[in-house]
Image (cartoon, rainbow, N blue to C red; front, side, top):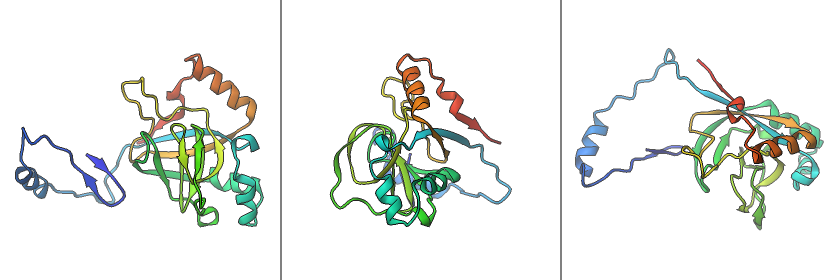
Length: 196
């Protein structure tokens, strides 16, 4: 099953079942969730450095909003974002909903190379680029954390339904985490809290 904002794609093996059989089974499912239903969720804290070298759009974006860069950072870090879906790139999580005060237009011409770990804004969403790629989002920071690691059994850090919080870090802390990741000494589980 591959969830998106308003739909779900179900991939099936036609050698095992038919479309008609699958449709009957899906139609017979009950999707009853009420206010008493408790869903265990994960909250993941992502360290982000908003220094100029990692945030090429932060200053101009702040100016366009008549806010200081510190105000943009504070607003961005004050929210808990919901992982709505994964797409565009492996592990690219669409996180929302950003406050309207930091709603962002995409660039008219996307960059050809957005560095891995870049944190961007577009519309009422925020996201982290899992690998170097083209992209048109407003880049306001970068995390040293690998959110997609192709050598792991489960390569994705985020799952649909997770909650994500951003935590501001300084350049020294960024470099320390980055070095520990390279040396395989960083405990990714330390970022994850499982709620009740």
